[in-house]
Image (tube, rainbow over the protein chains, first blue to last red):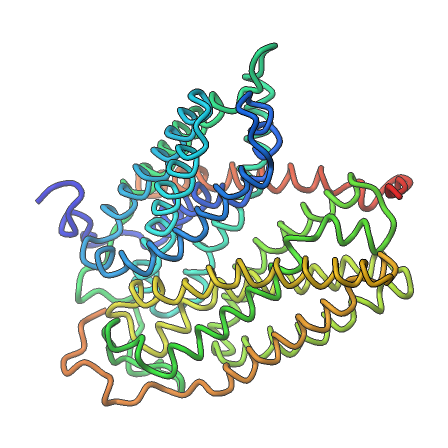
Length: 441
Length: 41
């Protein structure tokens, strides 16, 4: 038995389960740095290699793509190996990717940046994202939504930390001949490695027969919740998996449509400058983070299906209200409406692991979650492309800049209606898909 | 001892997250205060 083995992470009697959420948050808030990558765009173009912003931006896109792919491919390995080994592997790959990126800047090799930040770092993102999810669900069978909401809130918070940290470090390291981006990557790799390894050191899995005091599984089963177990190889062939895939893809596509264009949208719709637009984007990031915890925790009381119905119905109404806020030129209403929309975008991310647990059980929920995350990869391409393409086409067709987003908002509402239909189609998984002997937890 | 471990563990994640929220709130202040600067044409 080694420090990294699954057996070494099994908690002894009297272990306090509230030590596990900070372990998960530690990893998620580090890998969430990827959302703050845009602060490196301009400095990377000034690093002397003659790179352009679109070229540099590909490193971010490759990282997010690899997140989805690696979560899907390595999900079963993560389940078998346990959270500690997966967190250490995530740390090695994510922080190693940052170090390779620093080398790429020094050697002025664009392909090495893609390999370091995009491929290597991206695989680290995928492993780190799914590593603590099933562990949290097993520790909090009475509150799975709240538990996974905390971890995934950490991922949202990672952007709030990573972006200003990157800017401050570059300010610190810059010289007359260097923008300081390579040194910043190295410093961030060191800082993040310490925090991620701290998370890996304190994480524990519950013993097979552990359950919260006073909690009895049979007594707490709700209509859409099972105590059975479904293997990942079976789960992804069920209609429920694909309904949830559409649910996640539509929810994320619509949310990214606003988040990705927040600053520009605010400037175009209300005629404000870049500083105000940037402030709006920062504010949305806070609501994105908060929504992950709040909505996911609420789902423990309302059930997942009900809370997704709220995301989609209320979301569609609010998207349709965005053009009206522009029409009446109410910046306050615009901020309020978009803030609520973004809380539900974050909530959609955070509630999905608990929804999977309800339908497929805890047996391989991490691996099933890994496969579902491919919906995120698709949405990351779909959402921003739709907003960009439609708003640009509207402006080219002579629509005033302030009204160029109206069609996009109605389209986003349409995507949410598709998600609503998929959510309403979700039914409990048929017993024929259950494993003969449910595995504990 | 267990309580100290719990406080330390939560502090390790709460302090950076709190700092990040503070930075974002600072950044968002122009949205609520002062004269809106005109957008470029």
